[in-house]
Amino acid sequence: CAKDQGRNTYHYFKPEMDVHALERLMLENALRRAIERDELVLHYQPQVAAGDSRLLGCEALVRWQHPELGMLQPVQFIAVAEESGLIVPLGDWVLDAACRQLAQWQAQGRDLVMAVNISALQFCQSGFVDSVRRILAATGADPRKLELELTESALMQPTPEVLARMNALCELGIRLALDDFGTGYSSLAYLKRLPICRLKLDRSFVKDVPDDLEDVAIAMATLSLARDLGMDVVAEGVENEIQRAFLAERGCPVMQGYLFSRPLPAAELQRWIDAWSGATA
Ligand code: C2E
Ligand code: MG
Ligand code: MG
Ligand code: MG
Image (cartoon, protein in one colour):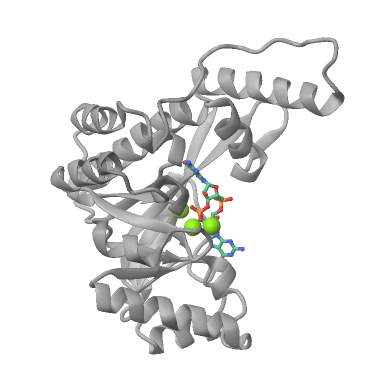
């Protein structure tokens, strides 16, 4: 982690700005207002056990319900959020909303894990662990049911500070997962030093199994590395039965992808869960 970053001021138009800079500025200011006006929503994508297809939990994925443009996807605004520092308040909003949903599931007697994406910039704020603590206290969510998905960029230099921060989260009972595994540049040697429970095999490696032999090699290497290090693996982007069967046969314990469900709004997820538990009971 570098020093605390993240700015919290509106930026203004300057005459020398080109049209792209102007568009970004408008997007940035609109996003800032969107966070203040609660225009963000979470969708939830199921994660299921490879063995018996039991629902284990969900990943929370943010969307922006724009008053004129409709539902915007992360690809349309996360980069601007990262570059402007808005990912920090956005990430706090997401964590709070996800923990509220988690507490609601607990109150309904549903034993599910909530996975939340944490950006590197957000993780590197010196107040990050405190804000997680504050949100857990405010929502009453069970930290043992919360999983934070970090990317390799957040952990590229596992300084003592990064390690201490990860350990503090683990001491709260939170589980840490490494998202988009295989797409970053972190050293494998770090994996043994970091308190990570789970690797998320990036969907770019899942897409063409079993036909692409290089992807097969990467998927199998990830599975065996995780097994030897005592970690769990989630395959992302499982879209068809061939991919599912191939990965399950090779010991991948958890699956996530359109084969099971797209990310759904909370109410639709509720209906999905009812239908799914009926079908797999
Ligand atoms: P991610 O964390 O790797 O999330 C998985 C992405 O893969 C999601 O895209 C999900 O909808 C998509 N996906 C899941 N299953 C399939 C499948 O079977 N096929 C295909 N083609 N795609 C699938 P989404 O929701 O558009 O999010 C994209 C990325 O945006 C996320 O990737 C994550 O990096 C980022 N993101 C989303 N929500 C948040 C958030 O709350 N905070 C932060 N910091 N980043 C977020
Ligand atoms: Mg993720
Ligand atoms: Mg991912
Ligand atoms: Mg991804």
